[in-house]
Amino acid sequence: MTASAAVWRERLSAFVARKEADARVARLLPFVTDVDEGGDAFDRIESTWTRAFFDGPFYASRPADHRLPATSLVFVQSRDGNTGAADPSGLGGGDTDQHLIYEGLSRVAADGVLAGAETIRGGQLIFSTWHPELVALRASLGLPRHPLQMIATLRGIDVDSTLIFNVPDLRVVLLTVPPCVNAFHHALAQRPWITPVIMDDPNDLRGAFERLRALGIQRISCVGGRTIARQLIDAGLVQDLYLTTSPKNGGEPNTPLYPKPLKGRLIVKKHGTGSEKGVTFEHLALG
Ligand SMILES: NC(=O)c1ccc[n+]([C@@H]2O[C@H](COP(=O)([O-])OP(=O)(O)OC[C@H]3O[C@@H](n4cnc5c(N)ncnc54)[C@H](OP(=O)(O)O)[C@@H]3O)[C@@H](O)[C@H]2O)c1
Image (spheres, rainbow, N blue to C red):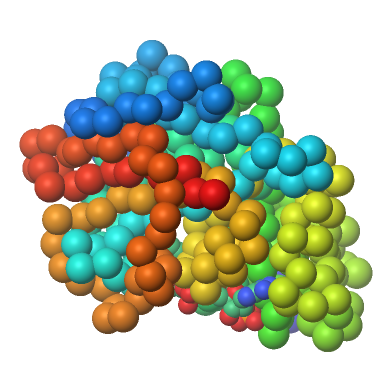
């Protein structure tokens, strides 16, 4: 039997308190800009505090099409190009990447954060911003404290025992196919805060994204993993790739973000400093 609503709320509060505490004590180091080709074509996501650590504005594309959300991908890879890791922070992108970019600038203005089911399976996590400066920036944009949690699944996922699905305060979208919704009919009926977005066919991610936009979702940050990310790229749904490369080899072998080099326009390139020397951040505009 699943835990009571009160128990799930306590678990969420404990998770939020731990993430906020970790973010508060993280020692961030400033990035230094090598390339900045962003301009008026992009939205600028920034505050005085983020500019100081990011060394300039963070750019995000506007929706290219009124029927689709603006969508970005945020990834960290090892020096030898692997993205698979039970804990991606172990790939060596550094605290500044994790707190300022991954759990910060890449999602602070997002209506929703999208992950493939493998990225959350077995974990008790939610996707949000945690550092007080980023929480304040998100609030200043008029967005809810936590983004919409969006999970893509074809086989279905253990709804009853996964934090993300059990707290009515969190809005959730399940991006899925009819057999999965049928199998989870009972679990979903008990959780009106979960909205299924049902594709007739797993290849119809574009149709699903059109429905997301119709639901009012204008900006999505997709956090991977590579399986869902590759499909979004192939469907032409990703405008911005935010890619951090660590200075060390590692991760699960043969797990590149994409099977061949990605073509895109380099918008921003930065490098880490101090103990994060060797970390690079690139923003590529795909398309
Ligand atoms: N380096 C990074 O920045 C980063 C970021 C995220 C994750 N990761 C790591 O990457 C690994 C997970 O990546 P992954 O590639 O194995 O999996 P993933 O992309 O996280 O999830 C794949 C799952 O997404 C669902 N899915 C796939 N295509 C779909 C479609 N068209 N429509 C709806 N749902 C679809 C399926 O779920 P079902 O199985 O439920 O059918 C599939 O198994 C983990 O080690 C994780 O920690 C790394």
